[in-house]
Every structure is written in structure tokens, then in C-alpha cells.
Length: 180
Ligand code: IMP
Ligand code: MG
Image (cartoon, rainbow, N blue to C red; front, side):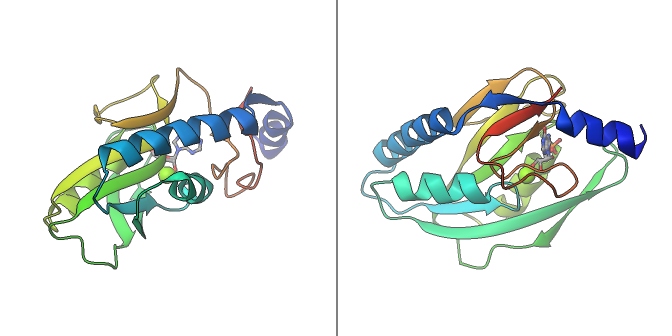
């Protein structure tokens, strides 16, 4: 696809989930997490960069104390095949051994990134790991990732906005859009 065609696809973006609905759903997730972790202090580990707004909103809706840290992974090789290799480019900085960890991710597509990150985090010996994802994409999951707290399930499409990018653009759109 040439650049002009790509730009045209961007211009054809369609509103998928408006900010009010995102806000409501994030509050619900935060309430559930607050109930489940009552009397404890989980470490929220956000997967950069797409998660920034979701994590910021989620964390501020919690009624329990929580620590916040970030991790980042990059994948090399074709994203069309499962032969991608995934490497951590930024590790967690606060100690998580013996701590309840919640991995917070923007979107789970094939599940490869999160599977790799989970393995890396597990090696640090946390008390437990749960997963919170804003969006679970169902169309091409290769690895089944158990999502404990899921914002929205969608069947298909490339999503932008509310932190999610297309080629580093459109992260700052406050609503979620699908490229049509
Ligand atoms: P996975 O390893 O295939 O699950 O890919 C996960 C990562 O790819 C996500 O954390 C996103 O950063 C990116 N990604 C996957 N699908 C989308 C999308 O629809 N919009 C924006 N980013 C996406
Ligand atoms: Mg991501």
C-alpha cells in the first residue's frame, strides 16, 4: 500500500468507542480490581507506550493503594508471522518479588508480546500476576492469553486513539477509532 493510500485509510477512521464509554468501562474495571485487591497493594506494570492514558485513568479510579511501574518490549521480524522475536527494551525498576502484580496492556492481538512479558516478569518471583487489558482483539490470537480484567473485546480492525498509535501517530486522540 502506498503512502497516499495509508493516509486515506487514516482519514477514513471511524469512531469505535467514545470517551464517555471508555471512562465508564475503566471505572468498572478499577472497581473490580479494588474489590479483588482489598487490603493489599498491587504493583501496576504498564506496557509502554500504548497504555499511558489507560493506566493513568485506571490507577486514579482505584480505591486501594497501588505502585506504578513500566515495562517495554519491541518485536523484531515480520509481524505477519509468529517467528517474531520479542525483547525487553525497558525493564521494571521497582522490586516485585513476593508482590501482587497486575500487568496493564493497551491491546492484546496475537498475544505474543504479553506472553513474553509475562515470562520475564514471572522470573522475578512475584506473588501473583494478573492481566488487565483495555482491548482484546479476537481475530488473530495465536497464543491464548488469560485476561483477568478486559475492557472491550473486538473482532477485527486496527484501532487507534486513547494511547494506541499507527506509526506513532494518533495516540493523543481521546476516543477509540477503527481504521476503516
Ligand atoms: P501482539 O504481540 O500481537 O499481541 O501485539 C501487541 C502489541 O501490538 C500491542 O501492545 C500494540 O502495541 C500493538 N497493536 C496490536 N494491535 C493493534 C491495533 O489495532 N492498534 C494499535 N496497536 C496495536
Ligand atoms: Mg502495547
